[in-house]
View (cartoon, rainbow, N blue to C red):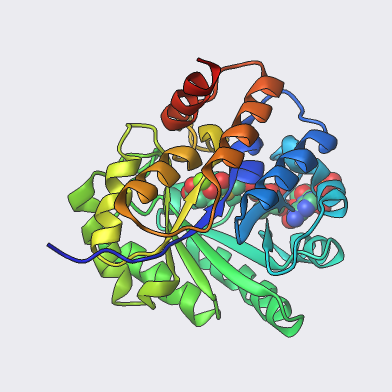
Length: 303
Ligand code: HMG
Ligand code: MG
């Protein structure tokens, strides 16, 4: 049996990937409280904002206010999505620690999500990447539809590898291999990850799994087996993607933490505080959270 990493980094993406898909506007004060609760849980990296067009994703229009209002903790990386120079300028003004350029391994999805081809997106990211680096920011690249696309179906391994190489050449410190629509299964996950590892450092590749088909935890385990040690998750399983119809949220953070605890893998995160944060945001949204572990722990507490 392959040995698993002894510790992993969990990137909490609920305040961005999670909330961006909520139809009803969530006030900045609620987003700020959510981020602050997550900070106190011990995350080293929280995706807190997205400087995209408010016409495309209205929920993220308060990103500057959120970044200005959060109580930052030393050493924690607060990330923001920046699709272009306009986004980067806003992220710099908001004092983001890390910016995320987001592309796709699928041409069709690239057009729907950011209104340009893959090649055009990479050309657009060049200036964003250079300016981010010149300003001392960390740079992350995210690759949507690495395991399948809602518009074109199959996505070849070489298409993923090609975008990983381009993101690497842009100077990314970290690259996310994203299952936008949650279609991957474990063997496929390993094939994609192993191909990505040929292009970029294994310790700087991240698994970003949506849980649409209930496979995310299995895919994380499969990724651990091939040495991936960074995972994205969303408190209470919030989320989806506005440009991937039917896609549900990211894998729930509470479920990932429960898995890691059981495997004896260190995360540095307090699961109980994350459960509280999940209850807080679910209560605000007026529905039961989507984390199985979170709901189980909350039910046990109530007994
Ligand atoms: P466009 O319409 O081609 O851009 O959109 P444009 O440059 O022609 O600008 C059009 C208008 O947008 C202008 O305003 C700009 O000022 C404004 P107008 O003159 O019409 O009033 N604009 C902006 N406003 C604020 N901030 C900006 C910005 N840029 C332009 N940064 C664009 C191109 C990329 C901007 C647009 O397609 C967009 O915002 N897309 C964002 C889509 C998005 O946020 N998707 C969800 C996040 S990605 C994701 O969830 C996947 C991920 O989780 C991984 C996974 O699961 O796969 C990361
Ligand atoms: Mg996502």
